[in-house]
Image (tube, rainbow, N blue to C red; front, side, top):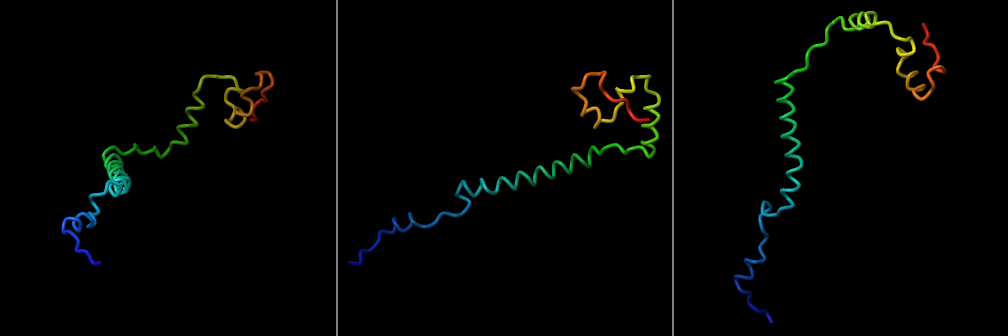
Length: 98
């Protein structure tokens, strides 16, 4: 009852190495792409840094607002009030607080 196996059939059933499976490379490629993208982002950040914000940016902003041409006070409403009254007819928009 014990039949000898052919040597070729034994070789056919031996497991293949892990790198021969495509799914393994699919799983490895995701994190590998993220690591490469991280290094590209680091290289871009070092090569082209953002300009430094001026120390007196707030004072400059106030001066810009003062130098704006005279516009209707309703056009200078804070964003929250302007958004809440975006569909309101112009005559019904409340005057800004001073």
